[in-house]
Image (cartoon, rainbow, N blue to C red; front, side, top):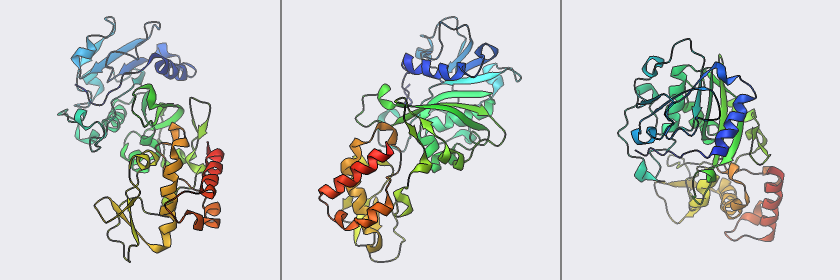
Length: 338
């Protein structure tokens, strides 16, 4: 059964262990991977206590024979008792859980599953369901891979619910999805280490958090002025006034690369554009032309802008054709941000 899983390269696994081992004595813990697949996170070179579970019995047959495993749906009837984990056992959850948005058209063929999920864990993205399931098991730490979008997109972050309310990010490293797939558009995957903490984390914490990348760069949401301060991202049919143009729904920079900008007529995916913010939609149109210059870890960000600089030359953007001034603006903006 393929629920959107990608198996994890050894060098990525070792980066996760380096994050853990610099903080913790892992021999004191049980390391549990509830979606272990072939057992990529079970290192033969380490004398650690492991436990694995997976819904795919064929994958489990490839796990090293000395590792205890359970053929199980890890999102149904979730409890420590189900997995044979003592209530007082010091526990770390590790791994690379499946992540896929069942409402997305991307790779839709692998997303149709009859997998039963506990009601409080259900979400359209299985990865978010897995993170919720970890909170139920109350591990001391969680060290897993997941899309950065789970944290930096506010709706996704809020969807983490019991996980974000009980766990706080204490270390991280961003790597490219190109490590897992040959798709043309790459997005940031976070190797994330969370600690169980009273009060968890809120979105203000995430906005101020400095994410380190595998290339030695940093990314912090608080450092950006996003276009969402000035325009609608989604269809706004109820907005009053006369539309002067229509624009395709915006999600993030990667979606902008794939989708149209201005539309010839209204449609279910159309944003109604008005005269007072038309200049910003021209800006987004031109941003698309230069977005491929940005590294992968910008992929799930909203379109960003230096609004003060833009307003000084907005008239230069009011055409579908690029010019030297527009290119100069984006060259400077990207140089400052990357």
